Amino acid sequence: MSRYIQVKWDATEAGGILIGRILEEDGNYIIDDVTEPMPSDRRKRTRFSRKPDGHQEYFNEVWNREKGRCFYLGEWHTHPEKKPTPSFIDKEDWSRLMKMEFESGCLFFIIIGIDEIKVWYGAEDQLIELKRRS
Ligand SMILES: [Zn+2]
Image (cartoon, rainbow, N blue to C red; front, side):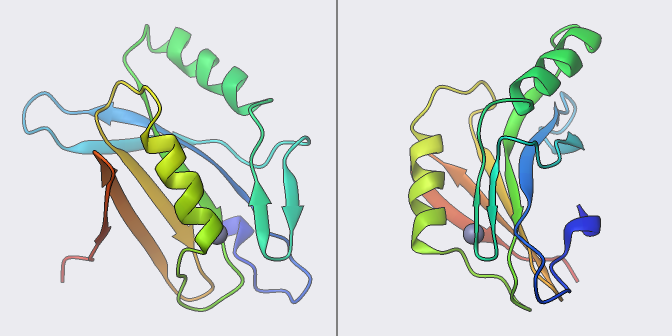
């Protein structure tokens, strides 16, 4: 994902989905893989609109390879700001996704800013920003 950090003034937003596992031992979530921007996604300087094309196929491939032992765990995208904050549209997108059926019980949303990466955790229509453990 770091390849898409919007350092250059004309770099457009990028994003994709998060794919991972939930550990049986302790219930921790692990993100193993992410998709990268696909040709049909709409990429602007301050907007990334992910379309299903490509991301879905990639997920299906991983799902087949792992024999169903993986989950859709959320979304990532970049922002052209040092410390990212979700836009109104981001929050609307996230709450729409949280209303959908998904197996993992919760979703993660990552925004890659220029200096910082921030992660939000969403479950049952509640959104919590995760703080880095120091
Ligand atoms: Zn955003």
